[in-house]
Amino acid sequence: MKRILNRKTYSFMFFMSAFGLLMNLSSCDEDSEPLKSVDLRYNPQDSYYLPASGADPVVFQVKSSDPWEVYGTKDWITVTPAQGGPGEIYDVSVACSDNTGLDDRTDTITVKSDYWIGKQFAIIQKGIAYLNLSNNNDTILTKDIDTKSFTVNSNQDWSTEIDSEIDWLSIVSGSSGTLNGDVTVQTVVNKGEQRSGKVFVYDRHHVKMDSITFVQDGVLLRPETLLIKSLYDVKTVNLSVESNADWTVVKGNEDIEWYSITTNSFTGNGNIEIVLDDNAGTGVRSTELILSTVPFPGTEPVVRTVVLKQGNNPLPVRYEFADSDLGTRWQTNQGTPVFNGDATFASARVTQGNMGPGLYSFRLKQMSADAYSTIYFTYGSMEIRWHVSASSGVTDFSTSPWTPQESKNVAIDISQPHTLSLNLTDNNGDMQVEWILDGTVLSTYVANSGFVVPYGAESFTYLGGSAGSCVYDWYEYTVPIDWGE
Image (cartoon, rainbow, N blue to C red; front, side, top):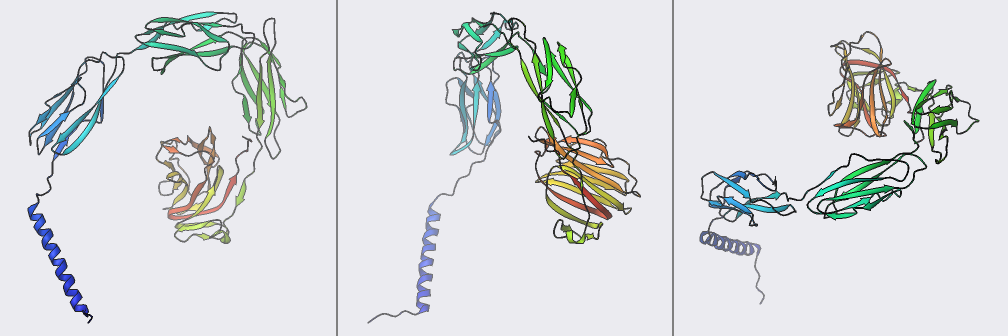
């Protein structure tokens, strides 16, 4: 006959089983010792760097609720005191014997109390190895076969090597050595331009310790730049050239007529004057200048190519604030902006994303006496800010993170309309920011330190007013010049 247990019976059996388990656990707790805690306190740094000899001891404090010990693993370490009792603050000193070996050496120091290792830190002591150079000031070689020497002062093995890309300079003695020694290099005849090459000096572990640059005399032709970029309306540009020879400059393409060169022949240092016509086209135009030295017996001509680019004049595109732009081109971010040809912000603002580099101009038509206009160009946590405070009667602009700006507070007549512009251009890969009021640049900053924005980054932009009432009647965008780079 099957035994039938109802739900109440099951509940009672489960309760009794759980009760028995709890009683067993309570009995076990009574028999076991309570978990011990150790209050160990100490203040050494993570690492210490000590000289090879005469090193001052490393001193720090230790205090613990239990007996403690401090120990290293090397026999050149002495810890005083190496252990102590509970409750008292001890000054512990770790001293190193002098290191007479060439190599640096390291030991790990442990601070421990009972079962608890509170801190481990490193003692790094310098070895006595050294390597330096002398007699290395005379590094200019003639254009003929020439030799120069320098001295390696060392207490270890060393070696020297020529830069792998140099084939006109060789080491004739001193490619390796032990202790002090001399190194002699030699050149081949130079029929071309002045050139330079490096000799590297390595220690016993083939770690580069020093280098010397040797310069061999030759023909010199050095334009200050190999790329000239001029704006559309610039009439004359100048290119400075360093030379020790006779040289000429000609057009890379004689058929190009939008620029001319006033002088074509020079002796020694010179200045090329380039006269440009206005660029009325829609794109950048480019050409080349060819600079060449005049060869003389025993030399070869040196040629340099300089690229000349003249930018076009990009025209601004003007945008009005049509009602249809709300929710499409501009999104409401705060308050209730009104678009009706003008944009009115009463403690309100709108946003627009994907705004790249270029010149942005916002026409601030009118402000109430308590207004504070708002323009933010944001790049993640980075911000460019351009404001006007009507109550103070001054401009106000900044960056975040903060960077010092000149002319950030300029008096402004709020009864008149004003154009607030931001010009975002390229400065060696970084964004350069210009704050411009009515066509006058107030401040310029390159975003490469603290406030960092790479050129080409797109902004998420806020426009409006954080106080009072601000009215804008248009904004313009001028694309940056595309230099084709």
